[in-house]
Length: 361
Ligand code: PEP
Ligand code: MN
Image 1 (cartoon, rainbow, N blue to C red):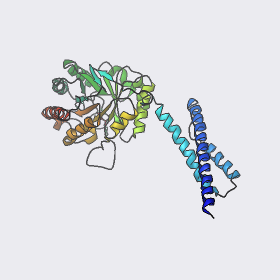
Image 2 (image 1 turned 180 degrees about the horizontal axis):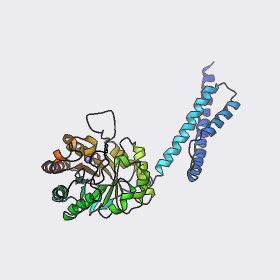
Image 3 (image 1 turned 30 degrees about the vertical axis):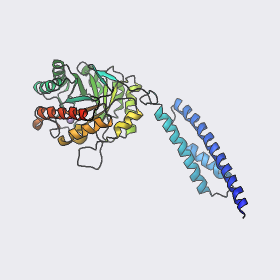
């Protein structure tokens, strides 16, 4: 074969490549239209029967020289890429997505604007245990000019024999302590049944990690007019987390704060593995503020400060950590709560860190 023949054949291959490119793009745009139709009709994107039909049709018409296995392989890749593209389009269309709303969502709680730039803080005990206990913590928080206190009254415990929380009485105690120190109340609600009564005492409804995919609860908090702090599920992917937030916004409530709180991995050195890169991913993918719970992610008091620094440095809108007047006798999470003197030191260290690196307070 002369060099000229080779050149001519290569030119032909280039031309065919361009034809294939144009045809697979034409195919992709038809599939996009199909995806939109299916979306409108609430139909499943992947249809195995349809895929089988397309492969059969190709088989009937394959006159070679490519064997059928190769043709199947090539076309399955083409089918898959079209499906991936439909899913990508779907994700971009979510109400919580940046694509849908480019500006950051800013949520005002007790005069504090969350998501505006500098970090906010949510401190407080794991669980409300007594009036005296929450009042002591509220004074320490309020004394720093902070605006929110947390405390669980309905505790989702692993064992049914562990302390389950004080329920509505606990919320009343927390609200009293909060009012006396100009604080907003952040507290977890575990079932839609408790929601209405709790709203008299709670300013921010927390949906805990174990309930991230409790879809009835998500729908219920989606129809209230108060901010929701949604925690990432124990084993939830970022995509599942974003879709959980979508349940809330789809029901009308856009005041959502996402909270990364560590995920289950094989690592045992910490209680969970803090997925710090989830913060910038969630900030890129959604317009919602993102918090990091350093207590439940690490389960270690010695890691509360370095992980909070990491959270602030990576762009989190806030940090959550637990504080108890006497952690050694706490009825839950005794391992990792800070005492009040430890909390004072912790907060000072964080402020110093932010000043040192000129981070917006
Ligand atoms: C909590 O914040 O009180 C709590 C139980 O956290 P999580 O749902 O993240 O485990
Ligand atoms: Mn706790």
